[in-house]
Image 1 (cartoon, one colour):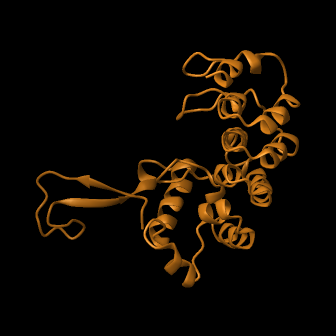
Image 2 (tube, one colour):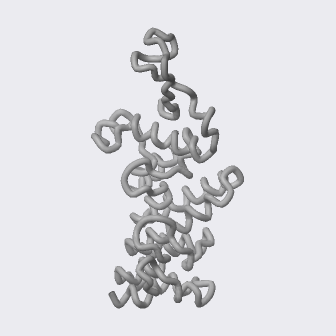
Image 3 (cartoon, helix red, strand yellow):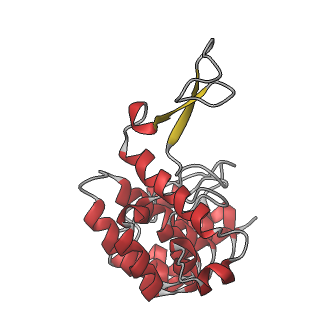
Length: 220
Protein backbone atom coordinates (compact mmCIF):
# COMPACT_ATOMS: atom_id res chain seq x y z
CA UNK A 1 0.00 0.00 0.00
CA UNK A 2 1.11 3.56 -0.69
CA UNK A 3 1.92 5.84 2.18
CA UNK A 4 5.41 4.62 2.90
CA UNK A 5 8.69 6.26 2.14
CA UNK A 6 11.96 4.70 1.17
CA UNK A 7 14.99 5.79 3.18
CA UNK A 8 18.52 4.95 2.06
CA UNK A 9 20.99 3.86 4.70
CA UNK A 10 24.56 4.02 3.53
CA UNK A 11 26.81 1.17 4.48
CA UNK A 12 23.97 -1.22 5.28
CA UNK A 13 24.78 -4.92 4.73
CA UNK A 14 22.96 -6.36 1.73
CA UNK A 15 21.41 -9.14 3.82
CA UNK A 16 19.89 -6.76 6.41
CA UNK A 17 16.45 -8.13 7.34
CA UNK A 18 14.53 -4.90 6.95
CA UNK A 19 16.19 -3.79 3.72
CA UNK A 20 16.38 -4.96 0.13
CA UNK A 21 19.43 -5.63 -1.98
CA UNK A 22 19.89 -1.89 -2.57
CA UNK A 23 19.87 -0.99 1.09
CA UNK A 24 16.40 0.57 1.06
CA UNK A 25 14.34 0.59 4.22
CA UNK A 26 10.58 1.11 4.16
CA UNK A 27 9.37 3.32 7.01
CA UNK A 28 5.79 4.33 7.78
CA UNK A 29 4.90 7.70 6.30
CA UNK A 30 3.45 8.72 9.65
CA UNK A 31 6.97 8.92 11.03
CA UNK A 32 7.74 11.87 8.78
CA UNK A 33 4.37 13.24 7.65
CA UNK A 34 1.56 12.38 10.06
CA UNK A 35 -0.79 14.93 8.54
CA UNK A 36 -4.45 14.55 7.72
CA UNK A 37 -3.79 15.94 4.23
CA UNK A 38 -1.20 13.25 3.60
CA UNK A 39 -3.56 10.54 4.80
CA UNK A 40 -6.49 11.51 2.59
CA UNK A 41 -4.23 11.88 -0.47
CA UNK A 42 -2.60 8.54 0.33
CA UNK A 43 -6.01 6.88 0.38
CA UNK A 44 -6.93 8.55 -2.90
CA UNK A 45 -3.75 7.25 -4.53
CA UNK A 46 -4.36 3.74 -3.20
CA UNK A 47 -7.90 3.83 -4.56
CA UNK A 48 -6.76 4.89 -8.00
CA UNK A 49 -4.08 2.22 -8.09
CA UNK A 50 -6.44 -0.47 -6.86
CA UNK A 51 -9.12 0.36 -9.39
CA UNK A 52 -6.65 0.87 -12.27
CA UNK A 53 -8.79 3.82 -13.24
CA UNK A 54 -6.82 4.94 -16.25
CA UNK A 55 -6.44 1.47 -17.76
CA UNK A 56 -9.77 -0.29 -17.98
CA UNK A 57 -12.64 1.12 -15.98
CA UNK A 58 -15.11 -1.30 -17.55
CA UNK A 59 -13.32 -4.31 -16.09
CA UNK A 60 -13.15 -2.67 -12.67
CA UNK A 61 -16.83 -1.80 -12.81
CA UNK A 62 -17.72 -5.39 -13.68
CA UNK A 63 -15.74 -6.54 -10.67
CA UNK A 64 -17.80 -4.29 -8.41
CA UNK A 65 -15.31 -1.43 -8.19
CA UNK A 66 -16.39 2.18 -7.92
CA UNK A 67 -14.14 5.20 -8.46
CA UNK A 68 -15.26 8.26 -6.50
CA UNK A 69 -14.15 10.72 -9.20
CA UNK A 70 -15.76 8.79 -12.04
CA UNK A 71 -18.95 8.28 -10.05
CA UNK A 72 -19.02 12.05 -9.48
CA UNK A 73 -18.58 13.06 -13.09
CA UNK A 74 -20.95 10.48 -14.60
CA UNK A 75 -23.59 11.17 -11.94
CA UNK A 76 -23.54 7.72 -10.35
CA UNK A 77 -24.98 8.76 -6.99
CA UNK A 78 -25.42 5.22 -5.55
CA UNK A 79 -21.84 4.30 -6.49
CA UNK A 80 -20.54 7.55 -5.04
CA UNK A 81 -22.32 6.95 -1.73
CA UNK A 82 -21.12 3.37 -1.52
CA UNK A 83 -17.48 4.28 -1.99
CA UNK A 84 -17.59 7.27 0.35
CA UNK A 85 -19.23 5.17 3.05
CA UNK A 86 -16.12 2.96 2.92
CA UNK A 87 -13.60 5.77 2.42
CA UNK A 88 -15.09 9.01 3.84
CA UNK A 89 -11.81 10.96 3.74
CA UNK A 90 -11.64 10.69 -0.04
CA UNK A 91 -14.42 13.29 -0.25
CA UNK A 92 -11.73 15.84 0.66
CA UNK A 93 -8.93 14.37 -1.44
CA UNK A 94 -7.30 15.76 -4.57
CA UNK A 95 -7.11 13.61 -7.69
CA UNK A 96 -3.63 12.04 -7.81
CA UNK A 97 -3.47 12.32 -11.61
CA UNK A 98 -5.05 14.43 -14.31
CA UNK A 99 -6.53 17.85 -13.58
CA UNK A 100 -6.08 17.66 -9.82
CA UNK A 101 -9.80 17.86 -9.15
CA UNK A 102 -11.51 17.06 -5.89
CA UNK A 103 -14.58 14.81 -6.27
CA UNK A 104 -16.73 17.92 -5.76
CA UNK A 105 -15.00 19.74 -8.63
CA UNK A 106 -15.42 16.67 -10.83
CA UNK A 107 -19.16 16.61 -10.17
CA UNK A 108 -19.55 20.37 -10.66
CA UNK A 109 -17.53 20.35 -13.87
CA UNK A 110 -19.99 17.88 -15.38
CA UNK A 111 -23.11 19.47 -13.93
CA UNK A 112 -24.03 16.53 -11.67
CA UNK A 113 -26.07 18.45 -9.12
CA UNK A 114 -27.16 15.43 -7.06
CA UNK A 115 -23.52 14.39 -6.65
CA UNK A 116 -22.52 17.98 -5.87
CA UNK A 117 -25.12 18.01 -3.08
CA UNK A 118 -23.96 14.66 -1.67
CA UNK A 119 -20.29 15.65 -1.69
CA UNK A 120 -21.04 19.01 -0.09
CA UNK A 121 -22.83 17.22 2.76
CA UNK A 122 -19.87 14.86 3.19
CA UNK A 123 -17.46 17.79 3.31
CA UNK A 124 -19.60 19.45 5.97
CA UNK A 125 -19.09 16.38 8.14
CA UNK A 126 -15.32 16.54 7.61
CA UNK A 127 -14.98 20.28 8.09
CA UNK A 128 -14.22 20.02 11.79
CA UNK A 129 -11.26 17.76 10.95
CA UNK A 130 -9.96 19.80 8.01
CA UNK A 131 -10.62 23.42 8.88
CA UNK A 132 -11.12 25.56 5.79
CA UNK A 133 -10.91 22.64 3.37
CA UNK A 134 -14.64 22.65 2.70
CA UNK A 135 -14.70 26.33 1.70
CA UNK A 136 -11.68 25.90 -0.58
CA UNK A 137 -13.27 22.89 -2.30
CA UNK A 138 -16.60 24.69 -2.78
CA UNK A 139 -14.83 27.71 -4.30
CA UNK A 140 -12.86 25.51 -6.71
CA UNK A 141 -16.02 23.61 -7.67
CA UNK A 142 -17.83 26.87 -8.46
CA UNK A 143 -15.06 27.84 -10.89
CA UNK A 144 -15.35 24.42 -12.55
CA UNK A 145 -19.12 24.74 -12.93
CA UNK A 146 -18.70 28.23 -14.40
CA UNK A 147 -15.91 27.10 -16.69
CA UNK A 148 -18.01 24.36 -18.28
CA UNK A 149 -21.31 26.21 -18.29
CA UNK A 150 -23.35 24.33 -15.69
CA UNK A 151 -25.75 26.91 -14.28
CA UNK A 152 -27.67 24.49 -12.05
CA UNK A 153 -24.52 23.23 -10.35
CA UNK A 154 -23.29 26.81 -9.92
CA UNK A 155 -26.64 27.86 -8.45
CA UNK A 156 -26.54 25.01 -5.92
CA UNK A 157 -23.01 25.89 -4.81
CA UNK A 158 -23.95 29.55 -4.47
CA UNK A 159 -27.26 29.18 -2.67
CA UNK A 160 -26.84 25.99 -0.66
CA UNK A 161 -23.10 25.98 0.01
CA UNK A 162 -22.42 29.70 0.33
CA UNK A 163 -19.87 29.85 -2.49
CA UNK A 164 -18.46 33.30 -3.21
CA UNK A 165 -18.20 34.20 -6.93
CA UNK A 166 -15.38 36.60 -6.11
CA UNK A 167 -13.01 34.00 -4.67
CA UNK A 168 -9.83 33.80 -6.74
CA UNK A 169 -8.98 30.26 -7.82
CA UNK A 170 -5.82 28.77 -6.38
CA UNK A 171 -3.26 27.25 -8.72
CA UNK A 172 -3.70 26.18 -12.31
CA UNK A 173 -5.35 27.93 -15.21
CA UNK A 174 -5.24 31.69 -15.59
CA UNK A 175 -6.27 32.45 -12.04
CA UNK A 176 -9.27 34.72 -11.72
CA UNK A 177 -12.62 33.87 -10.20
CA UNK A 178 -15.79 32.14 -11.36
CA UNK A 179 -16.86 35.31 -13.18
CA UNK A 180 -13.71 35.17 -15.30
CA UNK A 181 -14.32 31.48 -16.07
CA UNK A 182 -17.90 32.02 -17.23
CA UNK A 183 -17.27 35.30 -19.07
CA UNK A 184 -14.25 34.06 -21.02
CA UNK A 185 -16.21 31.08 -22.33
CA UNK A 186 -19.42 32.92 -23.07
CA UNK A 187 -21.63 31.12 -20.53
CA UNK A 188 -24.16 33.94 -20.12
CA UNK A 189 -26.66 31.92 -18.07
CA UNK A 190 -23.98 31.01 -15.54
CA UNK A 191 -22.73 34.58 -15.52
CA UNK A 192 -26.20 35.89 -14.70
CA UNK A 193 -26.47 33.44 -11.79
CA UNK A 194 -23.06 34.53 -10.49
CA UNK A 195 -23.92 38.21 -10.79
CA UNK A 196 -27.08 37.68 -8.74
CA UNK A 197 -24.90 36.38 -5.92
CA UNK A 198 -21.83 38.63 -5.89
CA UNK A 199 -20.98 40.15 -2.53
CA UNK A 200 -19.58 43.44 -3.71
CA UNK A 201 -17.89 45.28 -6.60
CA UNK A 202 -14.48 43.75 -5.91
CA UNK A 203 -15.54 40.54 -7.69
CA UNK A 204 -16.08 42.52 -10.90
CA UNK A 205 -12.78 44.36 -10.58
CA UNK A 206 -10.64 41.33 -9.72
CA UNK A 207 -7.86 40.51 -12.17
CA UNK A 208 -6.73 37.11 -13.38
CA UNK A 209 -3.12 36.10 -14.03
CA UNK A 210 -3.23 38.06 -17.29
CA UNK A 211 -4.41 41.20 -15.45
CA UNK A 212 -7.90 41.04 -16.98
CA UNK A 213 -11.15 41.81 -15.21
CA UNK A 214 -14.15 39.54 -15.96
CA UNK A 215 -15.39 42.09 -18.51
CA UNK A 216 -12.04 42.06 -20.27
CA UNK A 217 -12.02 38.25 -20.22
CA UNK A 218 -15.40 38.30 -21.97
CA UNK A 219 -14.02 40.64 -24.66
CA UNK A 220 -11.06 38.38 -25.35
